[in-house]
Length: 310
Ligand SMILES: Nc1ncnc2c1ncn2[C@@H]1O[C@H](COP(=O)(O)OP(=O)(O)O)[C@@H](O)[C@H]1O
Ligand SMILES: [Mg+2]
Image (tube, rainbow, N blue to C red):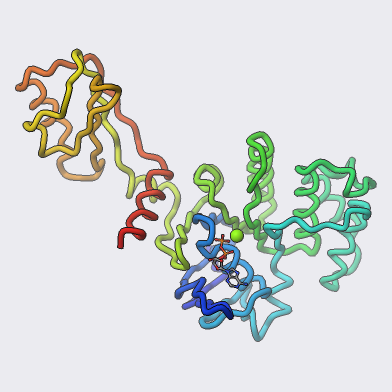
């Protein structure tokens, strides 16, 4: 796949002196869904705003579809559709007018067939003559996406598309984003919801305090950093972890009725069989065994934690 966005050595210090980005390198491939995952204040909106040309970088370079965002601003910007974190719409306008108008802002000739397709893709066609203020919150968000797509961009940015949205709407949005990718548009979304990255993305970048801590295929990420938890349901509860189990990373759970052991699935020796043997030697009986793969959430929390401890 070809790169559609390249970010090199990107830094941003705000006028306050606060350093919001500390040297970010990133390449986005055409056609992918990329999730930029990070806690509030990590620098997600700053990064998107710079790529979209709304905020001036302090250092580094960004190219979009072959155009430098500073020297080739118009070319870069016309390749981008942006759905900002804060929804802004002209409440009294009709849906179809606001979407047509957005297209015009990019100097594109009127194209009713294209606008119809966008509105149909977003299930807004029936609402095309409604005033925006008459629409539900979810529909308003769709209008924002339609506006962002109005000038046929190659890349669509969605900054926190489901922040503050209820679970059902979030699922709708995920489905919609999945469908949009079928149109060939590259999608970059920011989120602080781990499930969102897990659900949507082909690749995930974890950003924290202005640093991109890792970028990985979602599946590789989950495999590579994935740990498993073995839960041993005991025949009789224990009051404390016996000292003979000190060499394993175990903890007592469920009022002493379970032993939990976290292990690395890729270690040469996971320690599972030796642990079970030791339990047998100690006469500790068990009723059941269960292992569970760690989620992206565990990975994320451990990354953000490491950073804080450092
Ligand atoms: N205009 C600004 N001036 C000073 N600091 C800012 C400005 N905009 C954002 N910041 C700070 O930069 C950091 C990153 O913000 P932002 O990019 O909005 O994070 P995110 O979108 O990941 O929540 C935050 O600490 C925020 O307070
Ligand atoms: Mg933000």
